[in-house]
Image (cartoon, rainbow, N blue to C red):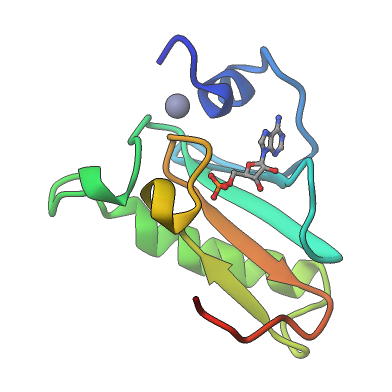
Length: 114
Ligand code: AMP
Ligand code: ZN
């Protein structure tokens, strides 16, 4: 996708502080962190939001969750705890339309869901 900032990060056209990368997914520190640890995890394939998930294209999600748990351990928040968040659409707070999962931790997070 030409104008997608996360696709540009994948291609190296926009710099990022990478935490993890393999053939399928990429994780990097959020540019505007909402918590002491705030990592964004994305599939390398452009999928705009959770609305576009199908049984055929969604297998990367289990890989993202398993990797998030590994990253949490590496960053020392596995015992203290963390949250994994996906925002979908305007009301969900999505601002970048390349599906992504926020890994947040390093403090006691606000528990209000809405
Ligand atoms: P969302 O609001 O759920 O769509 O999340 C998008 C996230 O991407 C926000 O937390 C932004 O701070 C983050 N973000 C936007 N641009 C960049 C960038 N160039 N590098 C790292 N994180 C970014
Ligand atoms: Zn994209």
